[in-house]
Length: 193
Ligand code: GRF
Image 1 (tube, rainbow, N blue to C red):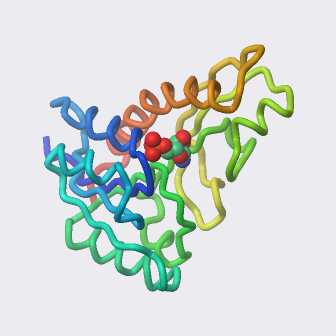
Image 2: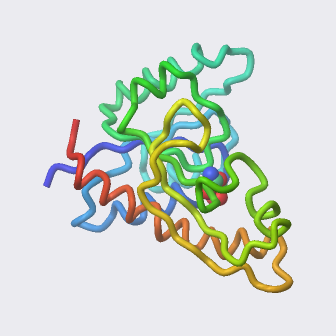
């Protein structure tokens, strides 16, 4: 099987990236992580990727316009022959041309049951609303933030006494299971470039 070449974009700790890399080690996984790219040269996720022997690209976005910066990322993706992009805690809003170029080939994981709680502070907002359940969603990336088609979701209960931190930990466990599974299924359905 020729594995699809995936790039993971991270800005921080990279635990979802690590889950994607781990899953790619299985022989029947339809993708391999060929590049990890970041807008934050200090992102801990970059070091995890390097230790796993994966090529990295890091460049600060500071001082660059959104489109200008995204062109740098796009160049790195093209140079690495990337077919699919997985956003994993990538904390930059992407420019429309970049999103259009990767339409149908770029996914994100978001820590809420979309369409509920787009944006930040999802767990605090779910607790404050008195919700019984929270969760995570894998969705296609479109120009509107956290708005593309949802391709997979996992749910967890919100328990009495939950804090945003305790809920985030319960959801994160599900993210690590859901994201590799959803990406693999999507790539199996949509094939290579
Ligand atoms: C995750 O909760 C993810 O859902 C959100 O950002 C967080 C990234 O965490 N988009 P990590 O860097 O994957 O550990």
